[in-house]
Figure 1: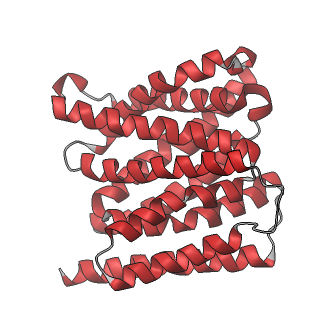
Figure 2: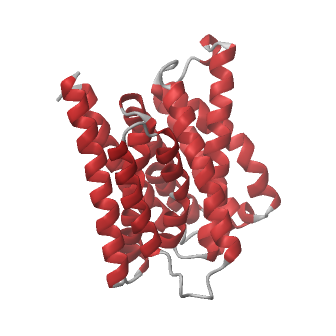
Length: 283
Protein backbone atom coordinates (compact mmCIF):
# COMPACT_ATOMS: atom_id res chain seq x y z
CA UNK A 1 0.00 0.00 0.00
CA UNK A 2 1.37 3.37 -0.97
CA UNK A 3 1.94 5.88 1.80
CA UNK A 4 -0.67 8.31 0.49
CA UNK A 5 -3.30 5.55 0.71
CA UNK A 6 -2.73 5.36 4.47
CA UNK A 7 -4.37 8.75 5.02
CA UNK A 8 -8.03 7.69 4.98
CA UNK A 9 -7.62 4.52 7.10
CA UNK A 10 -5.56 6.56 9.59
CA UNK A 11 -8.31 9.20 9.85
CA UNK A 12 -11.03 6.56 10.28
CA UNK A 13 -9.13 4.69 12.98
CA UNK A 14 -8.43 8.01 14.71
CA UNK A 15 -12.14 8.87 14.85
CA UNK A 16 -13.12 5.45 16.16
CA UNK A 17 -10.44 5.69 18.82
CA UNK A 18 -11.20 9.21 20.02
CA UNK A 19 -14.96 8.67 20.31
CA UNK A 20 -14.52 5.42 22.18
CA UNK A 21 -12.12 7.20 24.51
CA UNK A 22 -14.60 10.04 25.03
CA UNK A 23 -17.25 7.54 26.12
CA UNK A 24 -14.85 6.06 28.66
CA UNK A 25 -13.86 9.54 29.82
CA UNK A 26 -17.44 10.34 30.82
CA UNK A 27 -17.14 7.67 33.51
CA UNK A 28 -14.40 9.77 35.14
CA UNK A 29 -16.41 13.01 35.25
CA UNK A 30 -18.20 12.26 38.56
CA UNK A 31 -14.83 11.67 40.25
CA UNK A 32 -12.39 14.05 38.53
CA UNK A 33 -14.60 16.54 36.69
CA UNK A 34 -13.93 17.69 33.10
CA UNK A 35 -10.74 19.60 33.97
CA UNK A 36 -9.27 16.78 36.04
CA UNK A 37 -10.16 14.19 33.40
CA UNK A 38 -8.69 16.30 30.61
CA UNK A 39 -5.49 16.98 32.60
CA UNK A 40 -5.05 13.27 33.37
CA UNK A 41 -5.73 12.24 29.78
CA UNK A 42 -3.36 14.72 28.12
CA UNK A 43 -0.68 14.41 30.80
CA UNK A 44 -0.50 10.61 30.61
CA UNK A 45 -0.58 10.74 26.81
CA UNK A 46 2.34 13.17 26.87
CA UNK A 47 4.37 10.86 29.11
CA UNK A 48 3.65 7.85 26.89
CA UNK A 49 4.61 9.70 23.72
CA UNK A 50 7.86 10.99 25.24
CA UNK A 51 8.84 7.46 26.25
CA UNK A 52 8.02 6.10 22.79
CA UNK A 53 9.16 8.88 20.45
CA UNK A 54 11.84 10.80 22.40
CA UNK A 55 11.86 13.93 20.22
CA UNK A 56 15.13 15.84 19.85
CA UNK A 57 13.71 19.19 20.95
CA UNK A 58 17.16 20.79 21.11
CA UNK A 59 17.21 20.65 17.29
CA UNK A 60 13.94 22.59 16.90
CA UNK A 61 14.09 25.97 15.22
CA UNK A 62 12.29 29.06 16.53
CA UNK A 63 9.66 28.68 13.82
CA UNK A 64 9.05 25.05 14.74
CA UNK A 65 8.61 25.96 18.41
CA UNK A 66 6.03 28.60 17.47
CA UNK A 67 4.06 26.04 15.49
CA UNK A 68 4.31 23.54 18.35
CA UNK A 69 2.88 26.09 20.77
CA UNK A 70 0.04 26.97 18.38
CA UNK A 71 -0.71 23.27 17.93
CA UNK A 72 -0.63 22.73 21.71
CA UNK A 73 -3.00 25.63 22.41
CA UNK A 74 -5.57 24.25 19.98
CA UNK A 75 -5.09 20.75 21.35
CA UNK A 76 -5.36 21.66 25.03
CA UNK A 77 -8.37 23.95 24.97
CA UNK A 78 -10.22 21.98 22.29
CA UNK A 79 -10.24 19.05 24.69
CA UNK A 80 -10.96 21.08 27.83
CA UNK A 81 -13.94 22.93 26.33
CA UNK A 82 -15.32 19.75 24.77
CA UNK A 83 -15.21 17.89 28.08
CA UNK A 84 -16.98 20.77 29.83
CA UNK A 85 -19.52 20.69 27.01
CA UNK A 86 -20.34 16.97 27.13
CA UNK A 87 -20.67 17.23 30.91
CA UNK A 88 -23.83 19.26 30.17
CA UNK A 89 -25.08 17.67 26.93
CA UNK A 90 -25.08 14.12 25.44
CA UNK A 91 -21.92 12.92 23.71
CA UNK A 92 -23.56 12.54 20.28
CA UNK A 93 -24.94 16.07 20.40
CA UNK A 94 -21.63 17.47 21.64
CA UNK A 95 -19.65 15.85 18.81
CA UNK A 96 -22.19 17.07 16.27
CA UNK A 97 -22.06 20.69 17.41
CA UNK A 98 -18.27 20.54 17.68
CA UNK A 99 -18.09 19.40 14.06
CA UNK A 100 -19.40 22.81 12.93
CA UNK A 101 -15.78 24.01 13.15
CA UNK A 102 -14.28 21.55 10.64
CA UNK A 103 -17.38 21.88 8.45
CA UNK A 104 -16.98 25.66 8.29
CA UNK A 105 -13.31 25.17 7.43
CA UNK A 106 -14.26 22.84 4.60
CA UNK A 107 -16.68 25.41 3.18
CA UNK A 108 -14.24 28.31 3.49
CA UNK A 109 -11.26 26.51 1.96
CA UNK A 110 -13.13 24.60 -0.74
CA UNK A 111 -12.21 25.36 -4.35
CA UNK A 112 -14.52 22.89 -6.09
CA UNK A 113 -18.29 22.96 -6.32
CA UNK A 114 -18.48 19.23 -5.54
CA UNK A 115 -16.68 19.80 -2.22
CA UNK A 116 -19.33 22.33 -1.23
CA UNK A 117 -22.03 19.80 -2.10
CA UNK A 118 -20.52 17.20 0.21
CA UNK A 119 -20.10 19.78 2.98
CA UNK A 120 -23.75 20.84 2.61
CA UNK A 121 -24.83 17.19 2.81
CA UNK A 122 -22.87 16.87 6.03
CA UNK A 123 -24.54 20.08 7.25
CA UNK A 124 -27.94 18.51 6.57
CA UNK A 125 -26.94 15.58 8.74
CA UNK A 126 -25.96 17.93 11.53
CA UNK A 127 -29.28 19.78 11.28
CA UNK A 128 -31.13 16.47 11.55
CA UNK A 129 -29.19 15.19 14.55
CA UNK A 130 -29.60 18.37 16.62
CA UNK A 131 -32.76 18.08 18.80
CA UNK A 132 -34.34 21.38 17.78
CA UNK A 133 -37.60 20.52 19.55
CA UNK A 134 -35.86 19.91 22.88
CA UNK A 135 -36.13 23.05 24.97
CA UNK A 136 -34.17 21.43 27.77
CA UNK A 137 -30.83 21.41 25.91
CA UNK A 138 -28.17 23.24 27.90
CA UNK A 139 -27.17 26.37 25.96
CA UNK A 140 -23.85 26.71 27.78
CA UNK A 141 -23.01 23.13 26.85
CA UNK A 142 -23.78 23.87 23.20
CA UNK A 143 -21.60 27.01 23.26
CA UNK A 144 -18.72 25.12 24.87
CA UNK A 145 -18.93 22.39 22.21
CA UNK A 146 -19.10 25.03 19.47
CA UNK A 147 -16.02 26.79 20.88
CA UNK A 148 -14.22 23.46 20.91
CA UNK A 149 -15.18 23.11 17.25
CA UNK A 150 -13.52 26.41 16.37
CA UNK A 151 -10.33 25.18 18.03
CA UNK A 152 -10.73 21.90 16.16
CA UNK A 153 -10.64 23.85 12.90
CA UNK A 154 -7.48 25.60 14.11
CA UNK A 155 -6.00 22.22 15.03
CA UNK A 156 -6.58 21.00 11.47
CA UNK A 157 -5.00 24.06 9.87
CA UNK A 158 -1.97 24.16 12.17
CA UNK A 159 -1.53 20.38 12.01
CA UNK A 160 -1.55 20.41 8.22
CA UNK A 161 1.11 23.12 8.07
CA UNK A 162 3.38 21.85 10.80
CA UNK A 163 3.65 18.34 9.31
CA UNK A 164 5.33 19.95 6.28
CA UNK A 165 8.02 21.40 8.56
CA UNK A 166 8.54 18.71 11.19
CA UNK A 167 8.38 15.00 11.80
CA UNK A 168 4.86 14.00 12.83
CA UNK A 169 5.92 12.09 15.96
CA UNK A 170 7.95 15.10 17.14
CA UNK A 171 4.97 17.38 16.63
CA UNK A 172 2.39 15.33 18.53
CA UNK A 173 4.80 14.50 21.37
CA UNK A 174 6.02 18.07 21.90
CA UNK A 175 2.52 19.48 21.43
CA UNK A 176 1.06 17.07 23.98
CA UNK A 177 3.68 18.00 26.57
CA UNK A 178 3.09 21.73 26.09
CA UNK A 179 -0.67 21.12 26.22
CA UNK A 180 -0.19 19.35 29.56
CA UNK A 181 1.50 22.45 31.01
CA UNK A 182 -1.33 24.63 29.69
CA UNK A 183 -4.18 22.49 31.00
CA UNK A 184 -2.75 21.16 34.28
CA UNK A 185 -3.55 24.34 36.28
CA UNK A 186 -7.24 23.87 35.44
CA UNK A 187 -7.12 20.31 36.79
CA UNK A 188 -5.31 21.41 39.97
CA UNK A 189 -7.41 24.46 40.82
CA UNK A 190 -10.68 22.66 40.07
CA UNK A 191 -9.60 20.09 42.73
CA UNK A 192 -10.58 17.32 40.33
CA UNK A 193 -7.21 15.62 40.70
CA UNK A 194 -7.64 15.49 44.49
CA UNK A 195 -9.81 12.38 44.07
CA UNK A 196 -7.29 10.52 41.92
CA UNK A 197 -6.81 6.82 42.79
CA UNK A 198 -4.88 3.97 41.17
CA UNK A 199 -8.07 2.64 39.55
CA UNK A 200 -8.98 6.04 38.12
CA UNK A 201 -5.39 6.51 36.92
CA UNK A 202 -5.54 3.22 35.02
CA UNK A 203 -8.85 4.24 33.43
CA UNK A 204 -7.29 7.60 32.61
CA UNK A 205 -4.38 5.79 30.98
CA UNK A 206 -6.83 4.02 28.68
CA UNK A 207 -8.47 7.34 27.84
CA UNK A 208 -5.03 8.85 27.19
CA UNK A 209 -4.17 6.12 24.69
CA UNK A 210 -7.50 6.01 22.86
CA UNK A 211 -8.40 9.71 23.00
CA UNK A 212 -5.01 11.39 22.65
CA UNK A 213 -1.82 9.45 21.95
CA UNK A 214 -3.18 7.16 19.23
CA UNK A 215 -5.69 9.43 17.41
CA UNK A 216 -3.50 12.55 17.30
CA UNK A 217 -0.61 10.52 15.90
CA UNK A 218 -2.95 9.09 13.27
CA UNK A 219 -4.35 12.55 12.49
CA UNK A 220 -0.90 13.84 11.61
CA UNK A 221 -0.44 10.91 9.21
CA UNK A 222 -3.71 11.87 7.53
CA UNK A 223 -3.08 15.64 7.58
CA UNK A 224 0.28 15.16 5.90
CA UNK A 225 -1.41 13.46 2.94
CA UNK A 226 -4.85 15.11 2.73
CA UNK A 227 -5.75 18.75 2.01
CA UNK A 228 -7.47 20.50 4.97
CA UNK A 229 -10.87 20.68 3.25
CA UNK A 230 -10.90 16.94 2.50
CA UNK A 231 -9.79 16.08 6.04
CA UNK A 232 -12.47 18.42 7.44
CA UNK A 233 -15.28 16.81 5.45
CA UNK A 234 -13.95 13.34 6.31
CA UNK A 235 -14.38 14.35 9.95
CA UNK A 236 -18.13 14.42 9.27
CA UNK A 237 -18.04 10.80 10.43
CA UNK A 238 -17.30 12.01 13.96
CA UNK A 239 -20.98 12.45 14.91
CA UNK A 240 -21.69 8.93 13.66
CA UNK A 241 -18.84 7.43 15.66
CA UNK A 242 -19.86 9.54 18.66
CA UNK A 243 -23.45 8.30 18.47
CA UNK A 244 -22.35 4.68 18.06
CA UNK A 245 -19.91 4.99 20.97
CA UNK A 246 -22.69 6.46 23.08
CA UNK A 247 -24.88 3.49 22.17
CA UNK A 248 -22.24 0.87 22.92
CA UNK A 249 -20.66 2.37 26.05
CA UNK A 250 -23.31 4.69 27.50
CA UNK A 251 -26.55 3.02 26.41
CA UNK A 252 -27.76 5.98 24.33
CA UNK A 253 -30.50 4.86 21.91
CA UNK A 254 -30.54 6.36 18.42
CA UNK A 255 -33.77 7.67 16.87
CA UNK A 256 -34.75 7.22 13.22
CA UNK A 257 -33.88 10.87 12.53
CA UNK A 258 -30.45 10.39 14.02
CA UNK A 259 -29.84 7.36 11.79
CA UNK A 260 -30.81 9.45 8.75
CA UNK A 261 -28.37 12.10 9.94
CA UNK A 262 -25.64 9.48 10.22
CA UNK A 263 -26.34 8.30 6.67
CA UNK A 264 -26.00 11.90 5.43
CA UNK A 265 -22.62 12.43 7.05
CA UNK A 266 -21.37 9.01 5.96
CA UNK A 267 -22.31 9.73 2.34
CA UNK A 268 -20.65 13.15 2.57
CA UNK A 269 -17.49 11.57 3.91
CA UNK A 270 -17.42 8.83 1.25
CA UNK A 271 -18.06 11.38 -1.49
CA UNK A 272 -15.30 13.71 -0.31
CA UNK A 273 -12.71 10.96 0.03
CA UNK A 274 -13.65 9.44 -3.33
CA UNK A 275 -13.10 12.78 -5.07
CA UNK A 276 -9.75 13.13 -3.31
CA UNK A 277 -8.63 9.63 -4.32
CA UNK A 278 -9.55 10.20 -7.97
CA UNK A 279 -7.73 13.53 -8.07
CA UNK A 280 -4.63 11.86 -6.62
CA UNK A 281 -4.76 9.12 -9.23
CA UNK A 282 -4.77 11.69 -12.03
CA UNK A 283 -1.62 13.36 -10.69
